[in-house]
Image 1 (spheres, rainbow over the protein chains, first blue to last red):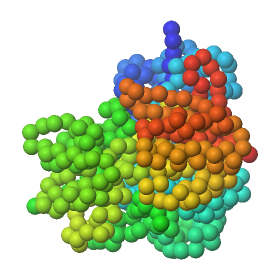
Image 2: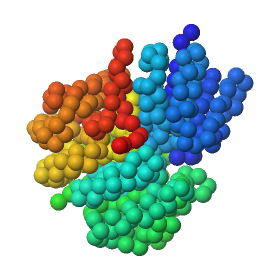
Image 3: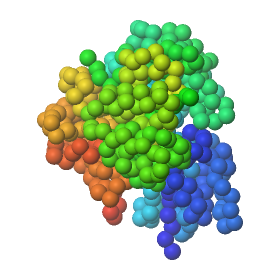
Image 4: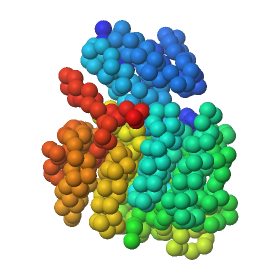
Length: 249
Length: 249
């Protein structure tokens, strides 16, 4: 009896963005483990056990999934977006490293998914078409001075930037400080994209020059993309196209 | 008669990593435009015209696709990985911006895909589980000093890094210089992942400490991922797990 653990990315929300590989893993699972709304997306069928848990219990959830796999179950941990980008994969491996030796012998696989920054970028054009970075703005798991330092260095490197978790309910002030740092470090009116709930019925995309950005333009469901100094806007009827050219001078 | 242009990401190679959204777009297309091996992946059917072109003609190909769409065709430009990450989307928008006004009125959509760095990261564990950057190491379209500057700033920011196009046939020396810069800037033995042809039958993954990396470990089909100073290795029978913890001190 050999269990397995698959950490699967469900993409940003739409079923049309779930890879066939992930759909197949869900169809073979005995157990699905994850945050309540993601577990709800796995199709119900006889024999499938769903283990839904609340947000912010990633390590407990990971240990539970590993225990089930060690018992011989075929477990899928569901994650939004791509599991390797500010999502469940790192949490599972933290639990593996700290856990019993038997967990290292398990068959563990990560199945990639469409991460939020790429879904958001696609809606706006190609703002990440040249070198870029991805930063988690939540200071739950790292000190604010480190975030600020990375923002300044990213601006100095002239990366386009993608921000995950720009504004949490518990720490709304962080994003306001990030905007201050960016205005100071960038010193221009480069476009910023606020992409809310991409690929869901609540999707809303907004393009705003950096100096005009306000903290309340982002909430917990928003990805924020900041152009580099080279990012361009193509005006047209309807939504503008935002893209970063492939070449740099 | 209104044409349309879809820029679609085929993912890293396996059909199981193509989103249903992209498969559906291909099923509705009248014309598929792209680099020869990607166009070959679109299923043949009566009425579908394939326009395959060689590498390094991205702007010509983009203009051709836009002309077809302007004639009323339903055109899909196929791209490997995600079209917005060092792929076809930026090229198409460069052509739109420089082209006739009518091209701006076209229905143009980007469909995201699984980009190579996320497929490679998934195979190794979760090396991009904390803040990271993506850099195109090809100096076809940007000067080498800019690449070197970004490498140094990325190391200073302690980002994990993903390198696209690490080593081209025409400029093999670039990656050797990148390794020199990284060894100097990082000064440690953090893990580097060489992920070749991920999700294809030729897939090969290798994890090497930074000081032991050699330029010939990468070729044109290799993604290179470099850990941050916090990236960890979980040793076990078989391939090790490489992951970057979610929290930073």
